[in-house]
Image (cartoon, rainbow, N blue to C red):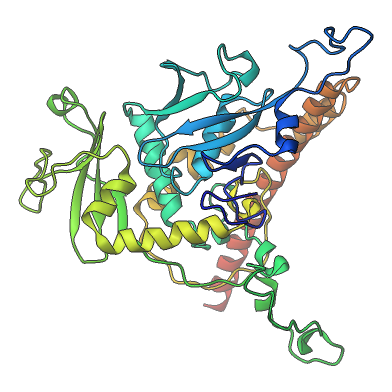
Length: 419
């Protein structure tokens, strides 16, 4: 694939991380691509009569996406894809990854997320879709803040070690040697290390873990403000929630999220003043843009983080439905994270839903029921396999919680016995 500057990229470093082919706005179609744009149909005796009806054939075509603050780009899509997959493409691109509250519009009409592209009226080869910023609600604001937090900590492996949101440690970079271009001219040592050879007395556990590098620090702290929720008279003016941010320069900013976006308010140690700050009056629809405007250190660090994030393989960035649990864990320095602390103390995050009286899950019955699901057609087989996979994943997660609980009890018992 070709990047937007015309240079050739490796498959895992290109902008087409979501399985789509992108190109610069002025790049012409090759003969192969032109053949892909025109649906391939078999002709019978009459050339005007297609063997496959047009509403059932899957075709590929190109569309153009225009987002605020980013260069327009072309994208090759399949007619069977949904609009939601285009949202995922925008979330993976470096220039648009910080936008979450938006809609895709064709000729001024918003597209539904779960509509297939072939069912969108007027969407043809060469159509232009515009990214339109939408007003924030409490739900959309929290989703945006969480996404920005994940972007800031995208190079930090502490979430993978702790298993936050099903995250797991990835060994992919170790297996693929990271950036192949940087390692192309280096001589590789293929002999096994001494500690795995027979006769070695030391068997370290550190090589069992992927290489952990020091994360890039963009902010000291990003947290939900204790002044939440907004009072009634501020809700009438559009306030959604409040944030506190500590930058690397040692300054604390109080930020208001309103329906139009984010801005720095005048709150200080003297008291609560949610009105715009005299020194920072601009409203940014993206929290990332606001933080970049008030902190030069954050802007430089975030540029480096997004660059390194784009170099990571797509399999290391996308969430996986199945968590890989490890019996070994490294010792790392715990950093301040208000969003993580709030999530961990929420009732739905600490396992209370597993102890609701009268709602104990019968794993054997669920597994037997899913195995008896029909599997005559491809759709039925997919539904059956997904159900089996989901129940098996839930069972493993529940078993891990029980094991961790008994290990804690055992450690406490051993500690009391020593005393």
